[in-house]
Amino acid sequence: MKKRVKMSKAKVTISVIVGVFVVLIVASYLSQQRPAQEVPPADQYFRVLGSTVDDADFPRLPDTSVLLLRGLSFNLTAFAGDAHEVFLESTGLSDAQYLGTIEKDEVRFISLQFPQGYMVTEKESGYPVEIRIRSTEARGAITFYLVYE
Image (cartoon, rainbow, N blue to C red; front, side):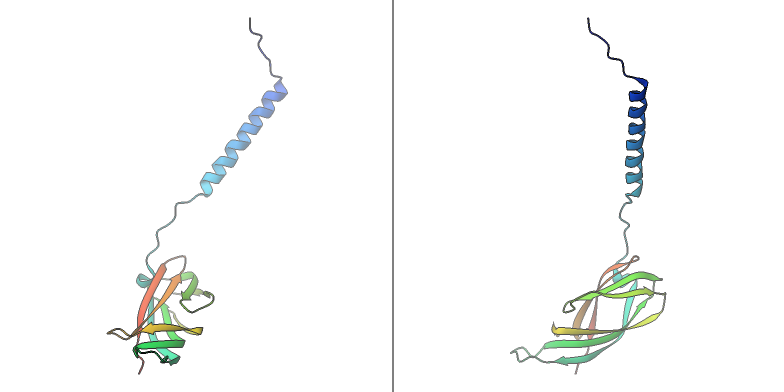
């Protein structure tokens, strides 16, 4: 015949407390896990206005349609609403630029310097420049065209 093992009340109480504690930790962790929110692409939230080439030259290449961009300025606006925690990145920039909050329809002047240069090839509409923007409201790339003469 099998002998029944009795647990003391103290052991039962400790087991229940530990079990409740584990359930609370798991429930807390699961409540922190929010599904990733879909945000619109940057070109549906931000607009680039009035771009200007501050410094550029034509490298000595057989293809004269290549522009080596060293400095660029433009105005950036968040036309779809306030944008928070805005970062701007581009090829040729060493670090992302933190812009903070851009309120709806606010025009923010941006000046970029490309220490190593940013090489762009001329297309029909001009020289395409791509910047990447991320914020809590939108993220993605915006391409705009420079006309340089």
